[in-house]
Image 1 (cartoon, rainbow, N blue to C red):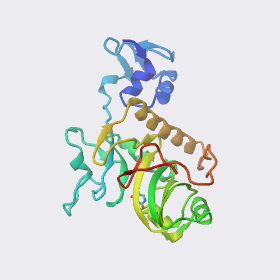
Image 2: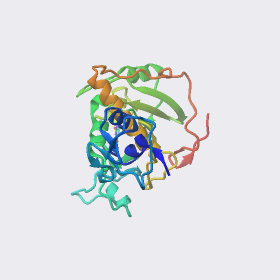
Image 3: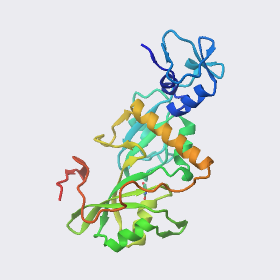
Image 4: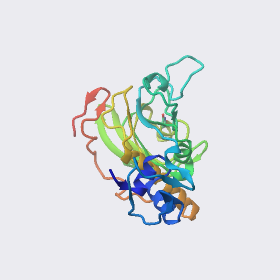
Length: 281
Ligand code: URA
């Protein structure tokens, strides 16, 4: 089956589709010995010999991307000298050595990306690239609008001011409340420390989104492979951020939606909070 040349290159994990287009346009790709600069060129992966910079495409390392729902009370590392359970215990049947991209606290749960693509992992973790991460949290008490605004503007932690955040009210439960908070940094215990500055203890914390990835309905301990679309979206996001930093446009992109809607928003459909289905309020 014929596929577009840029799609074939991207599918090997060598680059994003956009970067593959640049490789083609700049004359670095050949098909059956002839340099091809036409972006729409179709090739048959089973028959045509595609080379990038003179190297056969099939020699590119296949990258693996996994999304795991880290359960609570599990280390987000691959091993633990203290013998506590780690994310590795949940990757049965995965023969490729993958590494966690970032950390979640032992008592936190939720979305963890694991990959053997070291460059992508480094770029996603680099504070300059601002990949947004969204946490669903249960906090003690109910935040006032003023406290929410403070968190959104940035609060002073012992390691400096936090960048602007996005806070969405989800639900009140008796004396406590659920919120979604989106931050673009990844400092240690950041969300817990941010909430502490406005006087609220975080009781539960679940990462539900990271860049273009969503936890969806994965149960704690379950994992799945990313779809090609998700992996490409990640690679493109990193490429875009790196290019924008190189162009000197280093800034936090403005959110497309207004920072915060007034009132209590509906939680994500079907999302369980503390084991119960949440009723929209
Ligand atoms: N912020 C925290 O405080 N803990 C986490 O695990 C992740 C973000």
